[in-house]
Length: 399
Image (cartoon, rainbow, N blue to C red; front, side):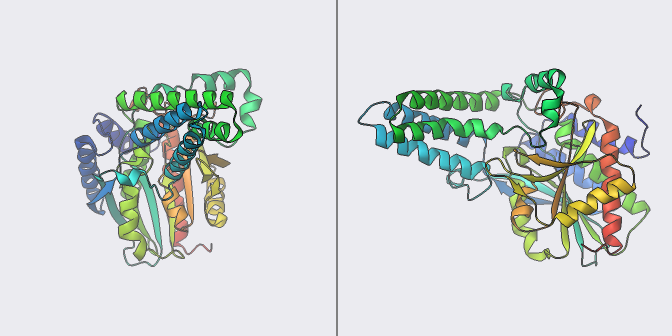
């Protein structure tokens, strides 16, 4: 039975107000949402501002284009004279895809013209404190698409629950994108036309899937990720009512996260030089409105990388246990979040997510991601845990 939290009216207000705005990455709606969030955080006692940032369009266009190039390589490799050129073309495309989705150098994406977005950056708590807790969210919303249909995973969960229970790492969807170009390159190297044909078909399917996503409507994004924005607003209100000393808290809502990280790079460029790695902690809130709260320990679309400093994640888990907040540990994601950027920079990082009994993010990138389908009990748990973490760090918790 759902027990209402005292903060639930504020949580609902934020989600319901912003879900009515179409907030595609870099869109006027995304900008309008950022303005509303900034003002709402000011009303809650924060120093809040809009910071302009840039992002590179993706992921649908660059990944779809690279898959198409790899497919052309497959057609070339199917012929004896074009085997070497086709194989090399597919191999280069595979490397560029891996570089992009892993948030590495992003060589291909940066050949495109940067586009404008905006981050909301608010400060509360003890503004003069040495230590800083950065709470990350994002306010843009994703395109829907057939690839995000979770009925197969739900079917597996219903019929083979023990199988899903053994896996604490999400489905590696990006591996299927890489599989086509890699198959073409290997087929060309080993002179196996059957493997080349399979890889070419995979490249074509990927290009078609990316085009279908790009044409699909923008979801309301209540769970992904207005649930996190709502936590930030409610946390600001709590810290205004009961101030804390000894810790600065930055509430950051990034734009263009749904292009596989956009606005977070602008935040990093502007603020990382002033944030001491020994005195700064990042807590990313990502889709916290499903029934079961969980902590992600690491992520990696290509190669899994745990976040730095397990002691920080241990502290989050300890606080959850002390406050009897159910929190599942040991989860790792094959999709990326904005947490990957501070993690790569060496900051202690943790991510709170949530999932349903089939280990799927509820209504993920679907048009059903609406306010009425949100589990506000889990959102309130994420809020309670985030506040507890802030107060523990403010008290001088040793990490």
